[in-house]
Image (tube, rainbow, N blue to C red; front, top):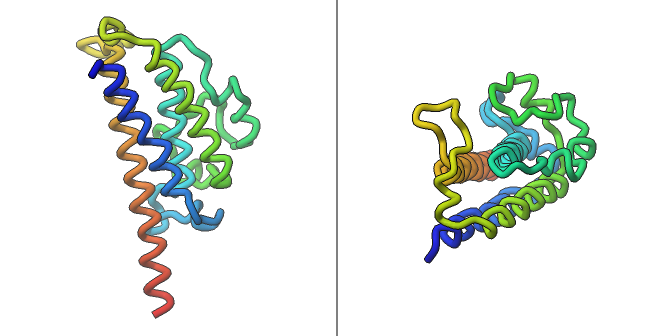
Length: 174
């Protein structure tokens, strides 16, 4: 198996994880914040897409799907167009509101761009430096693994938050 095939296999799992999390949730459930101050499912899925989108685009010299496909306008969030959610305040987390359909459409579009990038790389491309702000500088391969790890963490957090909805509903109906 080539490196790009391994990366494609790993990244190809993410849209399904997003779909599983979003399935059956209404907008209230998407906005509910665990313990009142945790990140909502809507914020987690949006942030997951924004991080993957911004970092893959930057590493590949592409425009972000967020702006290229006008998702920034479709979401209509009171945030800067370049915002990915890093360092968000509680108020900013609350401001990220979207339907599960829009969240899934955005993540699927981001994934299509990521897959296209991955299909076009070879092992030597993974050694290309994409960020010199770190010591040692970050290569494309390291950046892709970092993005994947971040996305898997956020997908897991969103799944956990969804499970809390079920637990809460079960407790309230007993």
